[in-house]
Amino acid sequence: MRKSCLFALTFMLATQCCFGANYSEQLRSAAEGGKTTYVMFHRGNNRATQQMAKVVESVVKRNGEKSTWVQVSLADPDGAELVRKFDATRIPMPAVFGLAPNGAVTGVYRMKVHPQQLQNALLTPRHAEMVKALQGQKIVVAVFQPVTGGLLPTGVQEFCQSADYAGQVQLIEVHASDAKEIPFFNRMKINPRLTSPVVRLLLPPGNHLGTFKGNVSASVLAEKVCNSGKCNCEKCQRKRRNARR
Image (tube, rainbow, N blue to C red):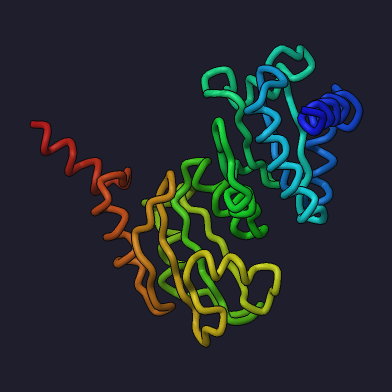
């Protein structure tokens, strides 16, 4: 009982002292420092809230250089902007969101959370860029390169510049020579010891359409997008119009 009361007191003090009312400034400061912020929402200091807070705090302590956290009560008027941004009133409480420095949401966990889930929400800069693009409804072409300065595959250039997909595609280059990005290679199951480019094609919200060698053609990439049923190129729109007649 004493231990439980002590943690409850620690939780309240942390909420009041460490994470004051200016939540937006805290998120901005964390982003400028390159840190992922765990934004934890709750309705009150109940047991579930205490347990989730304990897990989040433990992960932040292990990854202090990469992460921080804020706790937001749904009843706190100073947190209303964040509550609206994450639509937090519509999900079971407590809940924690992973928020990358670039604003990408890297994980949403309701009621309970495991430390490994929070670890998984820590993304490399290029991985976070990919997630943000997908959340922005972009087609993503991720090119994994052996070293910085490698030539961009011709087929990828042609696909990204094609009239059918101009403005819809986000190109992301990742280099194995950048040690910070090795976890991204591993998460994508691409050997960082590669000797030639590897291309991954994804559609929102995160559908993997294929992994290709660097010599993949623009036509193959376009065919994959067309076959997904979510393509809005002129050819696919015309085909849908004809099917409705």
